[in-house]
Figure 1: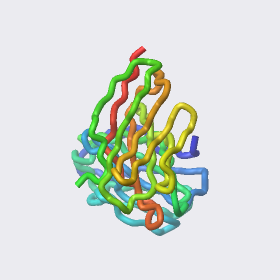
Figure 2: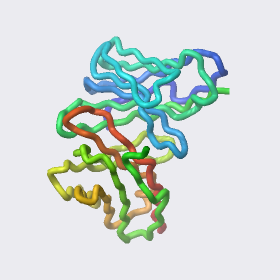
Figure 3: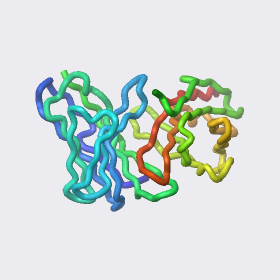
Figure 4: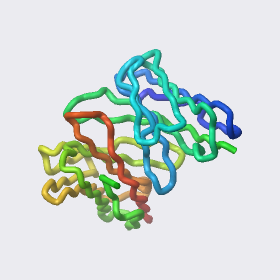
Length: 114
Length: 113
């Protein structure tokens, strides 16, 4: 298994509060990703990072921000949580190989926004 | 606009038989394809991949076939086991240009003893 941990694993919060999810890797992989998984939508990319301090938006980035100050950590922040952000969040990592790059996933964080 | 489509939301197979999961794509620029398996309350697990320069890749009980002209790939599991019961996701990307994967919505496989 890829050395990826996510914290917290479960969180319940109230609408309007800020929330930060953490992804930590021990593989020294260059690329890190945040996805959300919702019924009927599969996996949707929120943001990704291609190096320290280098990040870019995915397809559902509104309401989310990210930061990567160290290779091993990628933080996802919900500035003001809404009920539509109730979801399961997955972090993934990859080496960034051209010609075929495989992503490896963490165990997920289940977030409930009341 | 779903660029990667898994048209069967679910599939049920008897233990020991073959499971065939299908995936279609629309973007002819895709040249790298992956299959992931996901159990409830766990993250997706990488299963097998295939580059567009090949039409088949095997790993134990799992084989992926790629038909570029039809923009179709399939995952064969032989023989199917109850532990294979999971949701299977197909993903694709343009490997030369970016690292973002485009995902299908998944097929839930049930292997019955």
